[in-house]
View 1 (cartoon, rainbow, N blue to C red):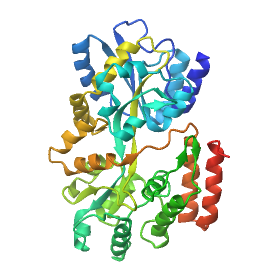
View 2: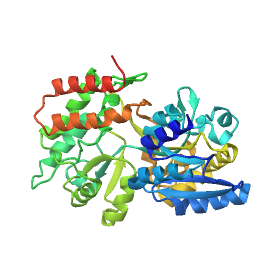
View 3: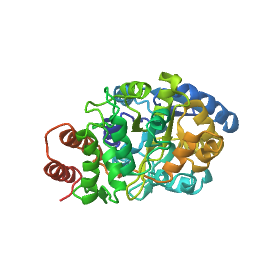
View 4: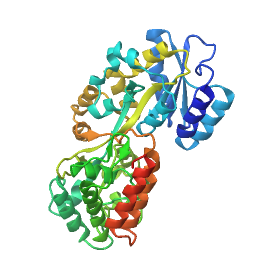
Length: 407
């Protein structure tokens, strides 16, 4: 059973732990695996944790592109972590594989890990199948990035606040000609149609079943498609680097993305400082956006659960979350941490806080990962292909239902 759990965990996520956690015989050491290149930043935080608790932390940073190979090697060697960073989209599959420790009792006795500390949508990710299996750590959302100077010149002193305003603004901006567009949308963004469906008053799942054969989803697809058919957005997918370049030149003066793009803009287009801003998502019936991010979990085979919970509690403190943002630009999942950061005069942080207060998570369905490429295929078919939306949506809805066990 243990071998099956670890194998499932590795195949799904590229992370695993064997032999009772990665700290081995070091009774005063726990091992933490992070995704991305954040080990140096964590070393500073963990040093303070060790000084307070006496518990040492061995930090290992796993590059996203190498995660699967690295974790497969770890499984074979029997050397895995005690605490692991887990993206929202993998939680259901991890939990279903039995790879995540049930933290229900431990969280109940640890104030720093109380669900009330976090944004409501982030708090929803804590439970899978009625058990607490992780704790929110890093938050992410989708907002509208826009060139304030370009919009001002076109007669728009503020960002569009509704679907109608977004379409009207994009139309006028695209009318500049000379290869200029109104907005940059990507058909390979699996989340935008879901966000638009929420805004249109719909849901995309009922229980463990995907439900896309609905009027709100059809409205969402038609709305996104309309930008492509009207020539308001490039038909070719725009990688982040291309989006930054288009934003820099003004050819793509608006786009929808996460806060990480603010870091890219600061690094790759510093000359735009003071010429761009973010705004909440334009609304239809609502302005709901996506709550994404990653949580901290304890692998079920760890022999150091109590020490691991102490680390998770430390990382979840208000001050620690603010320090982590200052070091990495990763937004905190704690509401009061982001609120405090936003009150310091950074208008963008204030927008992130506002948007995260009106956000939802992708349904915690085990097979959801299989739906994502089908969503991308649908949007490519109806936005840049010749497929008619009505029949394409019907086919996609049936496929998504089949993948998630519906009907």
